[in-house]
Amino acid sequence: GDSVTQMEGPVTLSEEAFLTINCTYTATGYPSLFWYVQYPGEGLQLLLKATKADDKGSNKGFEATYRKETTSFHLEKGSVQVSDSAVYFCALSDNGQGGSEKLVFGKGMKLTVNP
Amino acid sequence: DAMVIQNPRYQVTQFGKPVTLSCSQTLNHNVMYWYQQKSSQAPKLLFHYYDKDFNNEADTPDNFQSRRPNTSFCFLDIRSPGLGDAAMYLCATSRALGTSGSSSYNEQFFGPGTRLTVL
Image (tube, rainbow over all chains, first blue to last red; front, side, top):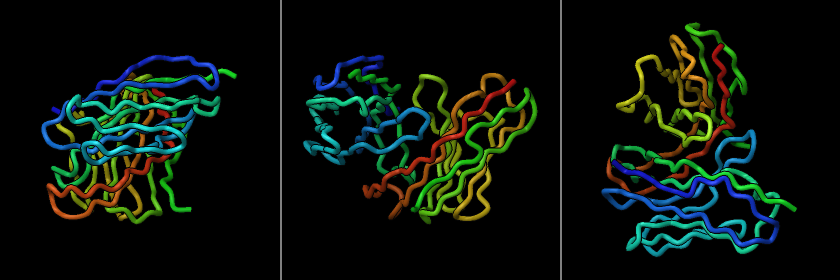
């Protein structure tokens, strides 16, 4: 079945450091790809998404590009802030093959950013 | 603000004592999902409702049931909680368009979760 593999961490960075979180996927069809973020004590929030090959999703300084040839969707941010401390999940959607969207998540990576 | 609400945020139950978790939404979405997230793990889909149609994941234990009395509400019932059922339970909603196989995607909106403790 479909699956997502991502860096698990935890990772600790200093403020203004560069961030990369690797994510690769396995899917039989043409999935949509997502990054979700979970702040302490809260539910998941969609950070960005890409629905087809070569699309770039971006939000709040984060970017990720849908690379079909390498089946990857790596998350990057040029300069992290303390407020970016959270758990980051890579996910894919089967685009409603079963009638409604189903998300498959990676295991998540906890990021801590120190001042 | 339109949102997904989960009650309670924290639930403590005893081993074997039935428990119900609640989810409501003001988004008028036709799909509602329940995920189980154990500590330091990815959320795992238990089941979802597409309108009134219930869709169970193949590996969801029979101990977990769900009800959706109307568009706005969806309940997760755990008939006999075991220690291994302690987890965060996340509710999500989306608006699904078109028929099976449609490539139209609508974002899933998540509630804050209910953390279940089993004593």
